[in-house]
Image 1 (tube, rainbow, N blue to C red):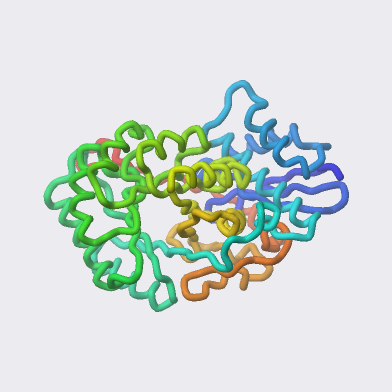
Image 2: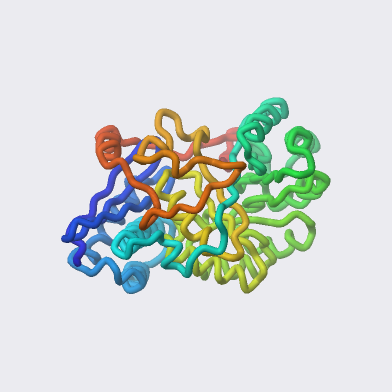
Length: 381
């Protein structure tokens, strides 16, 4: 069996899918994308495809090594994401050839269902509390919210009070039994992070995500030592090598993205690395159905898994959503805030190929929002 065709599809609202076909008719799907730079990743996939054409798709590890090390200049968001999508597709093929879901190929399931959380938005306490109540009524036992909108270099007393008001409003709705995760989204400066974390401690977040920008990683150790809140990060890290110093610094929850951090092959290695530090895995996944399906396969085989992000109905998904591109929508049915273990071969989903090809005819040009402070200077989104 040989790989004889590789295609990519620019799929609204902001995704990129890839399709890998063999000469025996077995097809695997992946989701290689950097949000805001899908066209750039598409070019990288085309380049990496040159290494895969005519090759045995079942030599997944060899292909991963070749794709990640076969160019002199390596790593980074674009190439790691291109590798990720192709890696997902190869695992999808391997599962279909062997008639088993990918998590069985990774050692078998360690759980029967995976806990997921739902993201809520809104800039005012009343908005987030209403959104939290709605998600609890849908059966979710954990939600995540942004801590704030744009922030100045040093958060004022008013800024801190607004963050606290939002967290307090949601905690009042959730009560003590449900979990609240708070995403700083890299918007909080090193000067402001300790003060805001201290103010949030009474609300017992499950974790605070991206407390600092990735380029301020050297400061994470001192920040972790100053708070009782578990720190989480990783959506903008792309390899084991980049996660290792964060584990040394005391990060409690790793959030690699299966569409950014080298795919299933690297995600499972990052999880194993985290396990040696007593850290937990909570994969980042505000993307499409293939990224979520790939994450779930790792989740079911990972002992130190914590919780899974999913983006069904998220604000990004205007006009198109995850279920628009799968044949059987029940695979993503939530039961008491969990997803049940998939049993179908490969990634466990069947992609609606006609819907994908139709969507690609429209495509998209989604870009990262650009924010400014009142004085006109750039602000982190």
